[in-house]
Length: 124
Image (cartoon, rainbow, N blue to C red; front, side, top):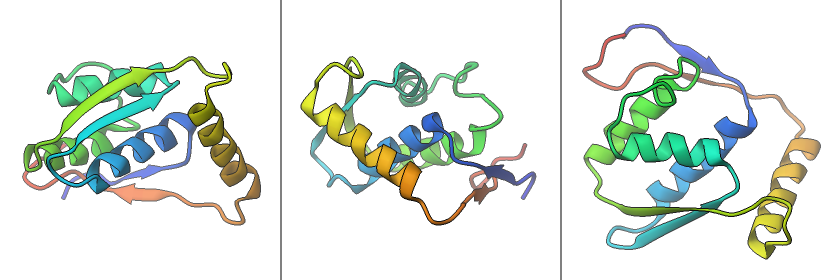
């Protein structure tokens, strides 16, 4: 199986996980438009979708998570567009998401982590 990596929550990790879950849960044959104020997440996801293996997608702390998602994308064709929105700029949708994120961060009653090994047929 190789090495197992343990993930702790961070803002980029949470943003990427939210984006990935959205893409997975949207029905097939639907165009997905992801609006975010996280340029890092957009860059990482675009590189992943374009199958680029550069520094941002090869970051050791996120590598397995990104490789699992790349593996999933190979078997699930989705039309995905990313739009950057300026944070803290009175964007109604972005403000709402920020409120939810703050609530989950401030009101969380437990600590969590995610342990993840490499996708099938990949050795590290």
